[in-house]
Amino acid sequence: MEITNSPCNLCPRNCMAERDKGQKGYCLSDNKIIVARAALHMWEEPCISGETGSGTVFFSGCNLRCIYCQNYEIAAAVKGREVSVSELSEIFLALEKQGASNINLVTPDHYVPEIIEAVLSARKKGLTLPIVYNGSGYEKPEVIRRLKGIVDIFLTDFKYMEADLAERFSHAPDYPQVAKSALEAMVEIAGEPVFDKDGMMQKGVIVRHLLLPGHKKNAKDVIRYVYENYGDRVYISLMNQYTPFERLKEREDCKELCRRVTKREYENVLDYMIGLGVKNAFIQEGDTAKESFIPDFEEGNIANC
Image (cartoon, rainbow, N blue to C red):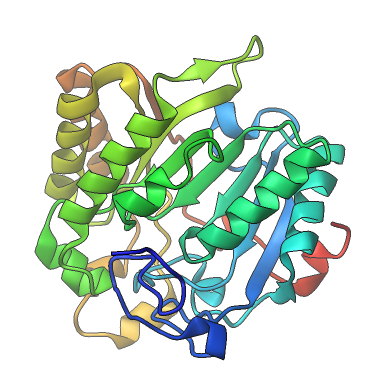
């Protein structure tokens, strides 16, 4: 089947929305590119942010919309402004001029055709930075393979190995199998990790896992799968920054998510990861579960790009 954005089958939801006619898909997006933020960002892994910051472009809308999402304002497509492909290309170039270490595309999957066009245009105008695809892991491998020659680094989530959790928290019981297939395609495209003389990643794959409170087994299963299948070919980033929001207290289906991850929980999973033999990894220390770590998605944050 041909992969198209109208009728849209870009993602595993296969919602078939006629986006070119203004119909919104499951991702809450139509044919307009909506950007919520474009700015230098210091809170990614050290080999992504570096000393100058990652040139992040946050796209509005999301095909997963996890109930605990820290960026729920943009996942629900209530923040951001419309940009053309040409303007998106200019945003990339502006971020490079500001000193960005890379161009970091956050939640980009529902705009893949437009992003490819914008990257190619920017490169013709002199863009030299690596392109980072920063997604949820819930992507079709055939769409990922379209990004060969476009994307250099995949900074991907791997949220669940348990289908029931994927259903409860993201309404996507097929997430585990989808994420496995997507990751295989990402490693195929990016290859072995490559760093420059300053330790900044130029090519490669980083797999993120956000530890959820009460779900150490899920985390361990994710880590084991990634390491047993890819070893040192990918980096694993174990995150403790889960932030409980007040809105979750109103729900009956996720009571365990109404607290932070404990230090003991995180250290238990970290010890498991070390015990497996994982060496290429990033960990978080200190108190990162704060709403102050969530980017500001006001429109003015893309005004200078």
